[in-house]
Image (cartoon, rainbow, N blue to C red):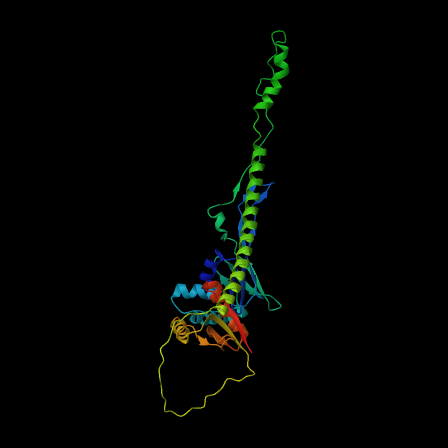
Length: 325
């Protein structure tokens, strides 16, 4: 139940929350809705949907659970895996309920069908707004003069008779026109906010990619001045030992944290990453002789990409992806 609550909390902040090996919950923005016949006006909102094809781990849910439960990222992933297994077993015989989000059932083709709850508005910009009804304005005015009262045409001035109707029309207030202009303004403001936010997100992503390439280039070209070193005479009386070599035909995928000319600096970073729970390791030396330290070194490309996305987007650290052939 806690995992389902965490998903609901994340939907207020993210447009996509992925549950690994299960599917993704998506939010779609809906502008102001007006029903002219009934006079009902609904504020903007975000509607929730589910896509079982988007099941790759993006690290958002696991990182959020790790923060809330004070556990490591790997422990959070194992907890999600157990929860997903339980959900799939329950869907075989009954419906699966996500409070505040919706419910799921299996259809005749054994595919998941999602029914959104619709009671919670996940659009933070519309917080506190509720639907309301505005009755249409009746523009038909009844004449308040008594119909049986005779008019004395001899005492009335002709100019007054000609301009009196004009004065009545001038005093009428066009409430309907002002209301329509206000509603159009609200709709335009919502559209400008949505598309402006999308533009900022796209520009931020492009800037991050350019910065990543620049950091990678600077690290590979970096040189370190260690000063002059004193000479030391060392003697060793030991027999050489044979060590197992890494198979040459295997490809490794690494998430590199940094490159160093000094082995001491590289070992210091390696130790720090392991203390923080990462299975850090050295990669092959680069052509310039730098020692590369990786958050993790994998045979599986998918595991390496999952760790790369988590460190880069969840932890906001500068890393780059390395393929060792």
